[in-house]
Image (cartoon, rainbow, N blue to C red; front, top):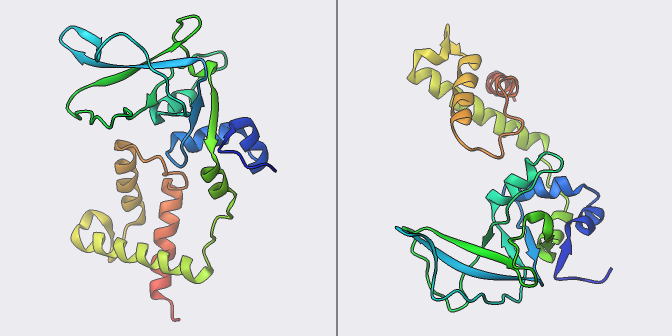
Amino acid sequence: MIRRAYYPLEKAAEILSCTEADLIYRGATGELSIYMLHDQFTIGLRRFNVFGWEPIGDETYFWQDKPLKVSKSCIKALESLTPGGVADIMIEYTPDDGEALDPNERFRFSLRNTLTGAVPTIQDCILVISHDDLKRLQQPEPSLTESDRDKLLKQIGGMALVLAEKSGKYKLGEKPNASQIAEAIQAIFDAGDFQGRKGTGSTELRSSISAGLKLLQDDD
């Protein structure tokens, strides 16, 4: 296979034996970066002020000769699209001259088709991932040994013991209350934006806590 700097999602999914939706999910969770090819697009930088969105400098657009990184929020929008839906394209960009963008100000980037002047949507773009990300995803994921798994479960059991010691709410008799601890963890997860929470439902949490406590009590 000829090495490329970037691979279209369709080709990358074929190489990785997954689907384009799988890659979009990983982009939405920040596991990989997704870029857009834009040979027909130009970009303008605008700053928000009391008059609304106004261009920085003049109205001229300038070329960018490399793929543009699509923002994670845009990938999330693409992931949640219903069939036939449309998502606006949002990108991440640093000016070539190294100008620092004030984090206390609001900026956005105006994309337009250089031929028609139309504002493109993400469906108008070719989405790609980098060779480095493709190579990394081709590496087999490390698996835990039984010994490593038991160590982690014991640590979970130890933290459950600390919670039970600090608050009677998390104690059932003289032992940690796995159900109460699991519910407290779920409440924290529900209140936050934890993209990697898959596999941490109440049932899994209770099971891990109980298994960890049992391992701590067993003889080696």
